[in-house]
Image (tube, rainbow, N blue to C red):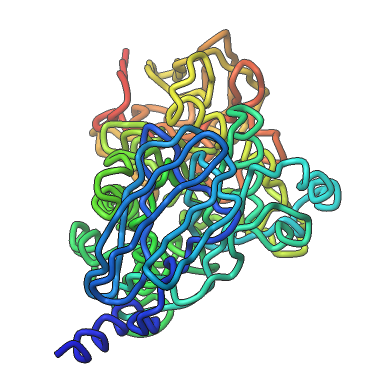
Length: 500
C-alpha cells in the first residue's frame, strides 16, 4: 500500500519524491527571497515518512523553530512574519539528516508570466550593455526562472529550474526577463528592501495554456486536447507547482497569441485567469497570499505598421474587460502599462518584440506603487474620457485629467448612424481630424457623418497607431499615453454621452 501511494505521489509531483531523503522543494534555494511581513512565508519539502522535521530560521537577531511531521512524503511549515531584510539561514533537520538554505532574504515576491515579450531577455533590449553593467549594484533583487516544461496533470513541484535563486550578476541576468528584472530594479529603488522575481513564461502561448480548467469553464472555452495550445498545459507544470509560495503580486505580458486565437473570448478568459490565480495562490499558501493580490499587465504594443486587422486593437480593449482602463469594476486591484506608443520598426527580433522594455517596466512600477503599495499622488493612468458631447458639427471628448495634445487628422474615428445602433470594430469608421483642444477637452469634427448622428467614437484603434512616443494624447506630464478606446453612444460603461 505504501509503495502504491509513493508511486502515485511521484507521478503527481513528476519527481522522485519518495526516496526518503530530506530536502526542500525545487524552488527553494540559497540566495532566495521569502515574502516578508505582514504575510507569512511557507516552506515545504520532502522527507522520510513519519519523521519529525525541525525547521529553524537563524539570523543575526532572530531565531525561529517549528516542528512538523512528514505526511505522504511531504513536510510543510508556515513561518511567523519576518520583517524585510536578512540574510538568514533556513535549516530543515531530522534525526540523522539536515538541509540548509543560506543567504535567504525577506522582501516582496513578484511573479512574472506571459509569452515572448515577458520572455524577452536583458541582452535583447536597448542599451543592454549599459543595463547589464549595473546589475551587480542591486544584490537585493534576486531572480529565479522556471524551466520550460509541459504537463497533462497538475504538478505539485516543478519539473526543472532554469535559473536557481541567484545574487544578480551580468551573466545570470542576461538570460532573465527584461521586463521582470527592470521592474524589480526600479521597485527596489523605491522600496529599499529585497525583491524576489519569479519568471515563468513561454513564447507564443495563448492565455488558455496558463489557465486552469476551472477558469476556462467560466468562459465556456472549448477544450483543446492536442498541440501547443492544449488547455492548461503550462498552468499544470509552470504555475500550479508554485501555489504554495507566498507572493506579493504578479506581472503579465501576453495577448499577442490571442489576437488570432479565441480573440473574442479574451475579455472573459483573461480576467477569469486573474481571478483563478488569486484564489489558487491564496489557498495554496494557506491564506498568506492575499486573495486579491495586485496584478499588473502590459497592454499590447505593435506588430504590423500597415495592418488594418483589428486583432491587436481588440485584444488591447479585451485586456481591460472592455472598460478601456484598469482598475475597474470587473478587474479590481489591477494596473496596466500602455505600450502602443513604443513601436520598434527595426527590431532584429521582429516588430512584435520592441526593444524598449525600460519604459514598459517604469510604467508598471507607477501602477504598482499606486495600486499594490497604495502610494498617494503617483499618476499611473493615462487620460481616459469621462464625458462626450456631440452635435452635427463636432464631438467634444472631455478627459478625466489634463491632457497634452498634438494635432492629428486620423487618430480619432467616428461611426455614423441614424438609429443609434451600436458600433463595433467591424462597423464603418471614418477618420476625423482634431479641431482643437483645451486643458481637458479635445474637439474632433463630426462633419464626416453629414446628415446622420455620431453613434460611436474611437481612438488609436489600429495595430500601429503612432510612431515612438508620438501618439497625439498624453498626460499633462507627457509621460503616460492615453489608452485606446472604443465608445458607443448607447452602451458606454465609463461615463456620460450628451448629444445636442
